[in-house]
Length: 375
Image (cartoon, rainbow, N blue to C red; front, top):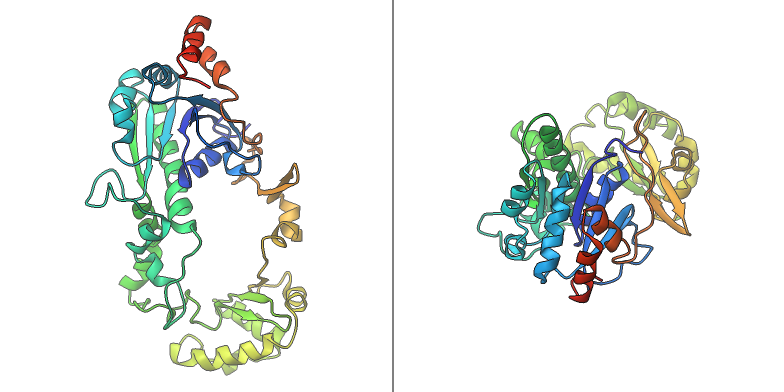
């Protein structure tokens, strides 16, 4: 029932940011048709990043299947694909023929390096893309190697989420009297965009170009993680003076004794003192002590603990379906509530139904089946 209800989006099956974008759009109510290879790998039910779709399985090497896809394009609002530049063109499904069939189509493209540039045809993964933006360089401890932030910055934050925003923005433009267009979402661009606040601090002289020496990269004693008596961890982040004062009060310290807490030269001594205090009790003892305060202290939960945390339970931040824990749709809407989509469909489960809806006659579908163009 989400806010994108009524929109039909074609998603060409891929990995990483493309399916993530499709999941986000489906969670928000769009009807997402996943176009898969006829002989592609099966999608397991636990792969909930593919939830909320219907599946159409086609042999995209078959001219008849390509013709069927173009029929689907005629009734679509948007298309998303994540192949290397040129692949869709070679299939006969590039922007030109698709927009020729449907001038209001939003054609979303997801790549690592973008549709042009010296690296456009090169292979890569999340870590390669964020390496060229300054993001990977900036994450890690002083004197140590850069630390990959999972694949959240390139694939998902700077990739799939950026593509979803671009598609929705272009859809809004098309729906308010504009024409369809191509959305070129590149992970190197998106990761760079995510770094805008850090580059802004650097421009103002408030960020050193050295890993692990800045306020938000673990150097500051009041923005770091601390090990507790049981070997588990706390996230401590009272940046503002009033919040730092509450931290000190709870720990039995006087914040007035740290007038230079913002000076990097004072950080090592204060960090050592805080580390000694936090090692004196267990993580959950500290979490209970700080719960509900403005001291900005939280337990670092693992992936088994996080879904059971009372705050996450109260908000329904995670959902349980068929024994599988998965993040629930976000964000929340007051009128058009986003709902957890159906489990990932079997490959090709909806092929014939979708083709019928697109206007193909029974004889045409039978001919596709006989030619091996559909599963």
